[in-house]
Length: 469
Image 1 (tube, rainbow, N blue to C red):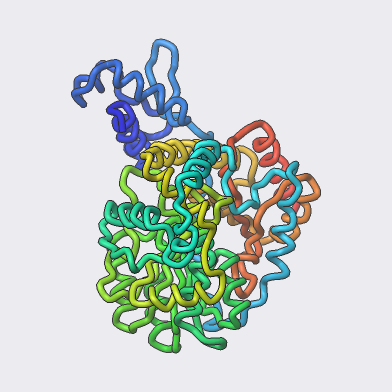
Image 2 (tube, helix red, strand yellow; image 1 turned 45 degrees about the horizontal axis):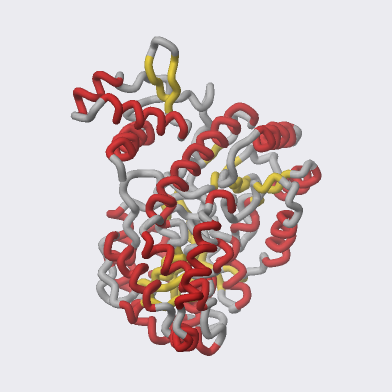
């Protein structure tokens, strides 16, 4: 990272943490240069970068100021209420009806589960794909189908090492995206009819997997900023025969909540006492906005109790469908299950990703992606404050590309979904994120697409629809 980029990130952190408030003047170029020991040109470059990221704005003859993204701000949602102790899951028809709304390319994709493909280095990946396939020895086509591409596994292990997790290569299993990894993990530790602790609200694919495997959900409420309610989880573990937990400890979908390091350690120690395995869904791990990557719960694991699942789909290559799991004590069983089902992800796709990671451009791409998402989040928050009722509540996640909105109790988000779709706008209504179809006055909106006049107009239309309830 260049010096001006590092300095820009330091100023961005002051804005993000509230040390520099909206409308407040940032240090002058002369003052910043003297205080931080950098040249004026470095400060100017950093401020130009912060301007492009939408965090500060220059005022003629006055200097630089933190942007006032909105005249008013919306409050944060309350912690979700605890649901019924156990629940049969039956949400697939509802989920499929929502996903079907995303097929029309002219629909404003606030309901999408992916960021814009324009944010990914697809041309660069295409060159890596062509180059790696040309250089691939014939025997690698067969060898990599079982163990997975050795270079890719090494690159993934190196990224674990940077985050403080020393991982043996034989613990890594390459999968067809994170969804296969999560499915395999769950099949390793459960049988039909077993109880699985999940978040509430939870990513709808979690509910669909439980439904397909005939498992029962034990919903644990999630605070919109702090994550899983550990007291509730402890109570459920003491009174119910829970066989596994499936949680997102960082940038949880749909709330964007992230547990702090102490709480992650507490979660691991709780599960360790009960010897209940954790399936850690960490697909948004690279999309944090701060200067330090969040540690996974896996970093505290000394007994192989945590199955940590990741993917390149959300941060680099959505169509390549390459994910992985660091399976702990279950790695061998996960690998065997994979061989009994899909055998292997695409060997050329694995080789392409390995080539791309070895070239050293991944972190540069991630910084650019994070900056774009952070600016787009600010734009959606500002637009919501302009157009949505003042009673609206919204999360402010420190990464990812989702916002969770809580509206007045009179708003029916399933009806809102239908009315918005008729206007060419998709969204994800709250009930698809709950086994009990709770959160009927909530919705998840995706800010992962570059903000433009169409997005702003869509927010205005949504605001008018919400007002009509």
